[in-house]
Length: 163
Image (cartoon, rainbow, N blue to C red):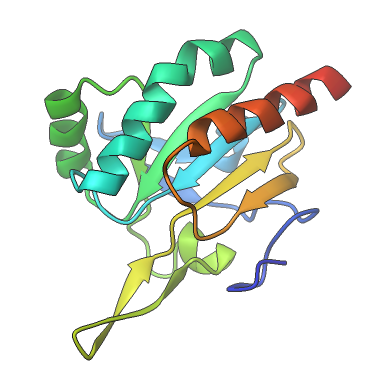
């Protein structure tokens, strides 16, 4: 269980439907039998989110080598993802969690935030490492971007070596 939500390590991912920039839809079934890293971030083309997406893109060949799928997820629409990918040459796939309630809601990471005295809903930067059965193996809450992708890769390698 996450400290912000209702689903966490040891739990199965809930069913979901995420829009891709290519016009497709990803569901939990698409990840069956293969471990995955789902990294949730607040907004395309912002400094922290760009750094995180670039870091995962740079490490994608190493994730691919151990058979781990990468997916970046935000509430941004597919057309914004397409522009973000093109502008920064990203190699990591992105998806849009536009449904309300969506996957981020179910995971407890679409949370109340506050800025300048105003409260709004926003994504808590969070990463999940999921095994091939769809079970959450590890959760990183309130992620700090620097060094995060490498830390996730190390955990994915450890999971791979146990398989």
